[in-house]
Length: 381
Image: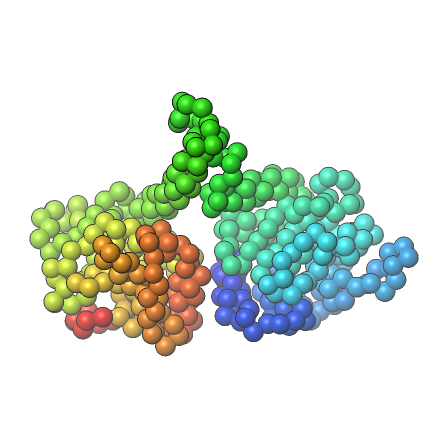
């Protein structure tokens, strides 16, 4: 497996087991050791590669231990300090990393709670660990753009110089992305004013602030949704990929959309697929693309709901969209494929349930082979 596949495998393990982990030691065994071994490729049972409870006396501090030291070519290159899963990571947690960084050869320090990994180096002052990480990897929502840099720290492709040279850019790009994400989620007054004054010619009064605050938030969410849809359209073959398909379509074969919507049964042949249902389908598909290729996500429209399944298989339901004009629900499934309907106000609310949708697909991938149902099956879902 390449590093992306190894990272996704660990992400699945974390999602499945994190609720049962209650101690720092359990966090190390369940998540951090697999990260060091399966993702980075070091033998955690070989003290020439990974030293647990690493000790390096620092001044008057004697006998302090760092959780792991990773060795490459006989030199300690990476220090790892672990906190309990679900504990928020704060710079105060890194006091031992700060001290050890100054007295060892290590140029990379990692602070982690088993799910989030913060990578530090010494950009601001030589041999002194920075106060802010240059890279943050969250296994609950893996940023694929960071994986090539992570690969440079693996045993087989270790390239410390390249990591250090890219660290400055990574540090500020990462911080900027997190600031933008926060503004898109809940825009601050300065952000609202910055955007409002570019579209509104009047004075930016308190009344205008109150009027445009919700508009900025709504515009940001719609913008992100459109970007996701555009990316998915391109992946599926162009702008016509989401054109609604009805039984009476007269478009020539070469213009038929690639993302055709299956009908749940013969009784559903005349079900009308709405643009809102297609928007919801695009959102679900974009979310679960983190687990499987987009081509494996199939839509099935019925008279009562819009279904989304894996591998065109009724036995692998991912979600159902109940988008009545008065009440809207997202149907999600548990381990026994029992549906729970969650109220939503718009299809954009589906993003709030991303973890559940991804875990549903990941469960099918783990337990069931990717084999479609026989073509002649017409049973209703």
